Image (cartoon, rainbow, N blue to C red; front, side, top):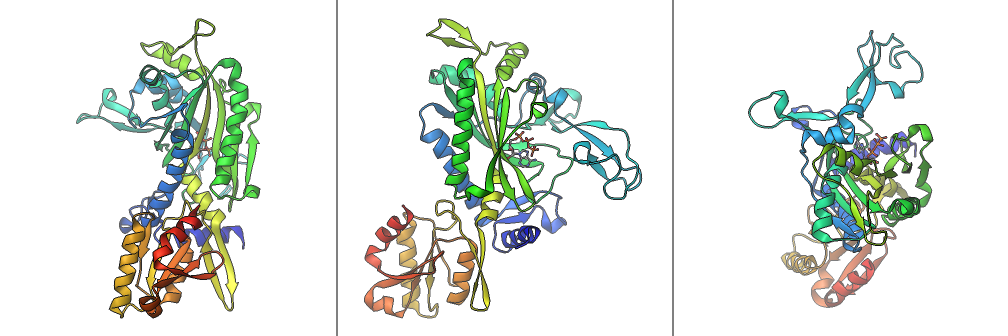
Length: 434
Ligand code: ATP
């Protein structure tokens, strides 16, 4: 399959089957905004919960946080965003299109070859104002990263939880950037979600933990079911690094449009805490009981994008196979990510006993799994729809079920069918989901 073809097929499947819709579509759409539909929100939530479980719930050294999107404007002075979070922008004098200077190979317009204007600095933070008066005093920014919410709560978490180094704070939340060149579906948008960990360590341990987190985060993407050959690490060159950063390695995915960043794992040194010590009324330090002195911890930051992960998971699991003269489209999603775990399908929706039995099975299974009952089409069509949305198991109730009290369980990937006693169905599925 040609890769841009794959992108078109994904966008179309996402809309057709309720994963992702174009934002504000009935008003002509708002460019580069996307709404997650009934299945998309489940997939996204499953990814976020797996992240939360891995980095917060399964560890005793990392604490969760959910900080406000709107922050004091001084935060962005301390972080450097107010001064430096800029892109170099040029306009074409001829066709008036706007470009990011970094994306251009030469000094001509890539669309029409026209002459370009001088470079302008463009701050990527999105601005709004608080309260009824729109003046400079009321102006605030929608956070361009979730990280600063973590840094400003460093002392709160330290005092409330009393952790020893190394420890971390993690959060998932929306971030906003007024990107000049959004695009590639949900890959680059102006409103997106991040999953970030700030891991505080002794300065002398920073390199060791940086390496550990790169490996750990790379494995996490494999644990999502993403194929190893579609993942790689890219170490940042010295000239790519922010002036304070000691090192950064990106985890990249081979998207249909090329290798691109899913997550950056950076060693940020003591820059962030020192900046907040300088700009706020507090001292962002930690008392090291071994050395008997106050230190400013170094920070290792694994910072990933939820939307990019959803897109990578969708692209990686999209699969087509030829069966007789037909193409079967299957999303071979890892079972833990599948929006629906089990679909219950009555073979004959006109037979009220079959329908009743199907509903009873749906209710019973729903206590343990995400289950959907569906009788809106013929069984062939229903199987095809469930394959397309990655449902691992379909349970079909037929006339024989009424007497032998058994149902057919169909496996998404192999299409193998198993006859299973209703009494044993829950246990059977439990074992399949292990
Ligand atoms: P890029 O180089 O692609 O602009 P970045 O290096 O600026 O990304 P970071 O500031 O490291 O990104 O943000 C951490 C993560 O947040 C990225 O790895 C990505 O997954 C996600 N992210 C950043 N910007 C966007 C965006 N505009 N749309 C969607 N996700 C984004």
